[in-house]
Image 1 (cartoon, rainbow, N blue to C red):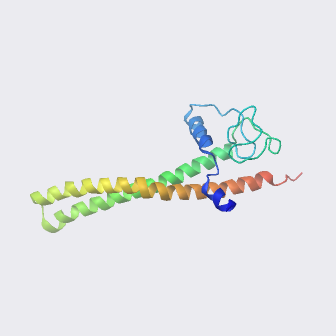
Image 2: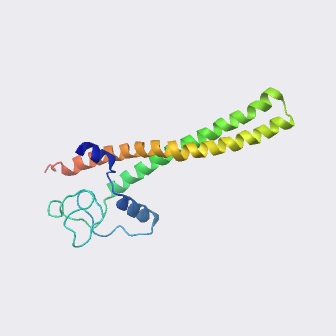
Image 3: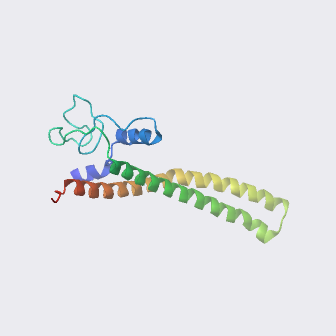
Length: 164
């Protein structure tokens, strides 16, 4: 049960992701008090991280989000966007090809020109809806998988004892 529960929740908290997006956009500084394990923002009086549940005695709070965590976040967002754009542009390309078929097989007539615009319009709507539903779902899962893999590598490297 715990493994399934941890798989369904994102490695980075929603609040942390929002803050990192603001930092990257230049709307917030990379400063504050963050959980030393998962980097979720925590208050000055907080002894327990609300995201990962670790105590500040176990993992001392830090005052900045590490660059490696920003890199993970950007990789996740990039992967999510890549999938959505691929589905959207793929759908539009298919619509363009389909809309040209009546002209290719029936010559240029009033109804073939009309069908070109109708098919283009419908393919735009279908492509947008597919990108927003299927693309978001697949992109989110793929982005989370990339984030989890990078997070596990980051945690393993962070917890590995340094050699003198």
